[in-house]
Image 1 (spheres, rainbow, N blue to C red):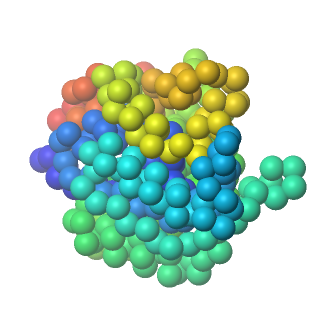
Image 2 (cartoon, rainbow, N blue to C red; image 1 turned 90 degrees about the vertical axis):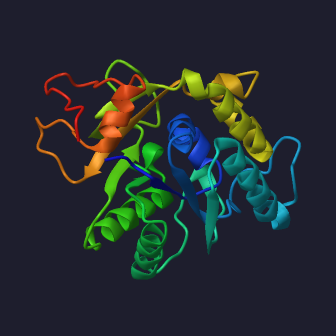
Image 3 (cartoon, rainbow, N blue to C red; image 1 turned 60 degrees about the vertical axis):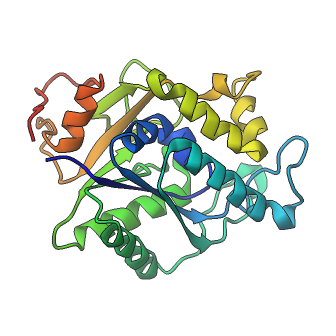
Length: 259
């Protein structure tokens, strides 16, 4: 059994690239990759110098996202049309406003439309605690659980012991970690599309280039079907990951390579 269709659900433009761009680029070479973005990133940074005035940044970031989606090799992009709120005082982050059941229905409809065998999205902690990431994680989980024949659901940025990263979801111990260096040039091309966010990418560690800001190790956690604590994934995505060099950060269980 092989995975023929994959859907990634992200909350903002650039989530697809900075969270799991290497894995998505790898998947796009082997399956139809569909990317869904909940908001236009209207509340994000404008860039240094500004890529657009505040009232036009959503249009600019949509164009950046379309560029990145093409660079990653995805075959489609869907925008859910929610509005990203401005960052509050003290860099307080907020989620977009959405009726949860409507968001779940939209998510489920797209999974069905694309006959997805694999769904990827944000982790349960929202990476660095972003409420919009957490909301989309919950919606994807509810959408998958409501399907009669649910696809695999994996989330990004699972905790990898021995590698420090502020985006790891500490509640999601990674089932697989992958050195995405073979796809780093593709990931860089996608990241370069997000011009308005380049200053943000580089600021945290005072970097000089966008490429320096790209993670070379990405990780995933299998959320559905749920696994016992000592159980290793033995599904088609697990087999694919192992086949391209991924490793199990937790060696307490033996990974099954045959679906």
